[in-house]
Amino acid sequence: SDNSNSINPEDRNFHDWYRFVLSYPPHLVRDYISNFELGEESVVLDPFCGCGTTIAVAEKLKREWVGIDIAHLAVSLMKHRLKNSFGNEVKYEVVGEPVDLKGAEELATQDRYQFQWWALGLVGARPAKSEQKKGADEGIDGYIYFHDDPKKKETKEVIIQVKSGHVGSSLIRDLKGVVEREGSQIGTFITLEESTKPMRTEAVSSGYYKSPLGHNYPKIQILTIQELLEGKRIDYPVRARGTDATFRKAERHKEEGKQKEMEFE
Image (tube, rainbow, N blue to C red; front, side):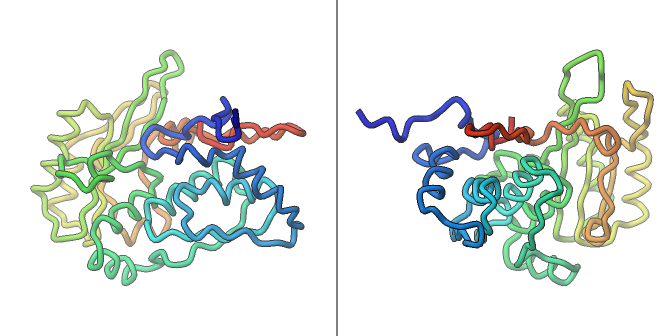
């Protein structure tokens, strides 16, 4: 029988919430592109890029590429995939994402879910499952996972709320309640509007998460979109120690004649 569409062990799903179409695992995409015998000056176009399988394979094969998708969640996945697969070696331009506060405001007006997914992408978070399906808001829009205890394999988390509308201190109190309910280490509130003094006071009153490594991190953090666009990020252990577990890392090792994992571990 024809086993050309069988899944090889190396073609694992790259994380558990955004799966490949089974007919197109990466090794088949690689073979498909290779069979065209395109020179390195050729350009691979994927107009429905999704999770970025094609562009990652094209990059591995040293082809120029263009990937297109209308969903900011998909764009975020592509960026994570390229970074985790190839480090900072890949140079590319993203067209269509907000680059300033005005653009962010326009996106929020057009589609609050796209705004939310874009904002989560700015901090390297993965969306909560219910939010991918545009489900009911349970007070959690996204997660960042990390490890910071060398003696344990416990996965810890930052939970994230994203707001594009009016904000006030009551929302920070709500976030504190969600952090307590979930047993999370850190909660982060991302807002399109400027935060108010009562909001910041409420956040400070939550104290700190004390890492086993001896560092303290604000338990509740507030970040504005403007601050994120200027490069500010969530303060949590991974920022200094590279222990992020939000997305499974891609295998960077390349072995002659054999494709290693293109996916996240």
